[in-house]
Image (cartoon, rainbow, N blue to C red; front, side, top):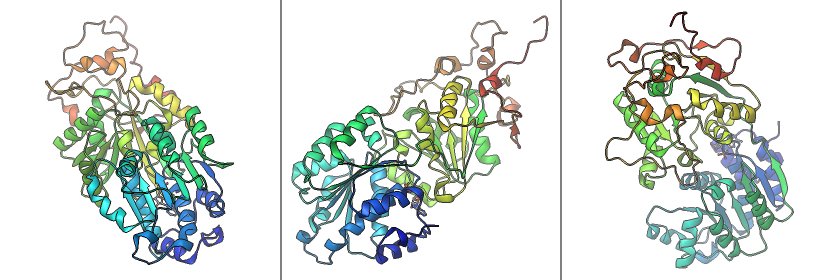
Length: 475
Ligand code: AMP
């Protein structure tokens, strides 16, 4: 087993790692750290959960040690390393990690991001810091206000470059890169490599070493399971799973901001303390929810993909895909929130009939089928369904996908209009009939106990689990 010391890290950095309980480097750290200590450019294919933050941050800090000093003069602390991230949450977490890695060295770091008053960031910048973690827009605000200078930056890190592209930051990135000294070390990390990312890499990196931690890798410590369920019963199933399995902390992903809010509200009504984070929430609201979740006072955090990006919560045991992502790689990102750094995790996906096509894409990407397990009382096809008006209440606007978020239009059988209690006039024998059954208020099945999930037996396509049973003759 390789040790951090063998990778060439300095004793004061090793001490900080020891304090944090890091025993040995992760695969990406093993590969990136020695190269980055030499000052080579790196293009890394890795996502959150692989330990990529330490992979770029530790060598970056070590290369700053010759400049590190305890002087209080701001002039002695120019910004030498710039780390750009797509979201505020990720920026905050990266800076928190850097701060911890710098515990025993006089390297100062700061995070700047939009959505909070810029004036609170200025006094700290004035005191001088060596490592700046920033979201692109806010960084440019500071540049424009002349509240920081980038002319001494010798290391640039672009974290989650594909997300920056998705979120429309490409023009900002180009402007920022143009402000940096040409002589510098560059590291760029991305989970995916579409054409534009490759072009960006070409324009920024110089003869980079490509380091890959397989993009379709889901941690071996994560158990994955699919529960086939009628879309209108998802909320009940989720609440049932949380209660019956006594899940203490769950991160739940929804496809849209409105869906996110509504699910959190509904779970609260069912007695489960839940909060929502998505792109329409203010920074303060997001931080508050995240802090409560981290502190363990919030049981369920419902999030959209964009808001959840970069969330780093130690040993998160359960991730639920309430809606399956339409993009298979988002699935890998989502479940990367659990089973980190060797901890055990479980990724539970609630899959309705129309989502089986997304499931196929996911299984293709990860190269394995995911086990489908029926939860008794929630098998698709059960005739009774709880009330679940998927429409926004009167006057409430419909959901818009988040910036950079893929459109999450529900599939035909899941559109709100269909979930009204009035059954459609349609031949009962149709396969769709299973999904159109009217709700019967007060049905004893609404909160039916379903203690043990039932394995679906020999693997068959999940779509097949939604087929209606053959009709008795004469109907
Ligand atoms: P990251 O992929 O950088 O977001 O890191 C994921 C999580 O793993 C963070 O909570 C890190 O603090 C933790 N971590 C990173 N490297 C190690 C390591 N070598 N040993 C233990 N935990 C680690």
